[in-house]
Amino acid sequence: MPTNIESSDSLNTNGMIWLSPPHINGNEQKYLQEAFDSNWIAPMGNNITGFEIDLQNYLSKEVQVAVLSSGTAAIHLALQLLGISNGDEVLCQSFTFCATANPIIYLGAEPIFIDSEKDTWNMAPELLEHAILNRIKKGKRPKAIIVVDIYGMPYKAKEINAIALKYEIPIIEDSAEALGSTYFGTKSGLLGDIGVLSFNGNKIITTSAGGALILKEQKQKEKTLYLATQARDINHKTHYQHSEIGYNYRMSNVLAGIGRGQMEVLEDRVSARRSNHRFYQDNLMVLPEIEFLEEPDGYMSNRWLTCVLTPSYEIRESIRLALLNERIESRRLWKPMHLQPVFENNLNFSDGTSEDLFNRGLCLPSGSNLLEEDLKRIISIIKTALS
Image (tube, one colour):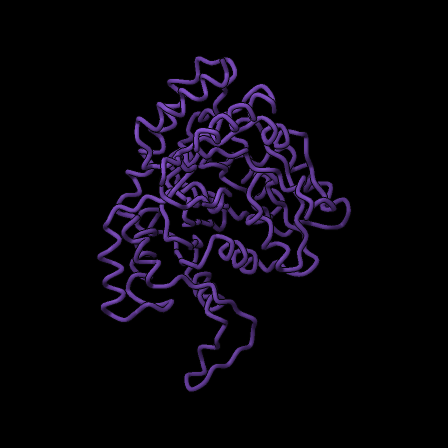
């Protein structure tokens, strides 16, 4: 059974409690059956259109949504829509999963990593502006900013967006973990110039594999679909002709059917994850060794994963290993990108915040299908480990 946080998408089996397994409700079956009955199992069909409309209706009728094969593909195409190419520099949140940064490399551009602030664990506005001024002074104006809503917590949009506007740099909001979260009433995914979602097996809703781009203009969606379907020139009806390099990035009609069923229970999934967080907080906040990430005023996190901070690496590991010994999966917080071997030569603007989070933090099991008895068992093991 997989244990990587980005592939922990199996159900609770054989007494194992997984970090964030998928939660299928049964409604998906009717849409899957529709795809098979119509013989539309390719990357086109009614489920794709329906899933995009469902997302648009949930997020905002003012945006355009394009569903794709993964969140990684969505970031890749977002960068391409912004004209990122070889030699460009992109400012990227360091405290995230590698899929946020890898597409920058796909296009031959250079990621420059920005550390986090302590209120939301997302990109620090002061470090962002410092990095921009540094690069401008060096004659290299950054072409884009990728900021993340980490673990479902929205980023400091007012401060970050003001800096981006000041220096005329577009923002890609990586909301892969944050569908259902809000920032002063605005849904995550709508806070930047382009939004990104993921429907990987461990996300708050899933299509098994998949992602989406949230766009402001119809022309952007048209360009996205063109690139995502191998960039076939539309003016040539009798043969395939290509003037640009494209990709096989469109979501299949089958997976979109799963997404349509999952959208019917999205609010329930958010409620369940937030309920898990409250249960953990109510039962663990009395312990001096446990600290939670609080929601700042105006923020509402979907609490995709409940995360805690401990006083030290050693205490965190004692909890993690105690849980693992009882067949309960937990996971260290993300290792920052600027500490990853593959990015060790990339420029970073860090004050040590994300490194400290990595050393002391732990993600607890947070699936929307967790039972109260599971939560009580987890809490009991943590308390025993700390005692």
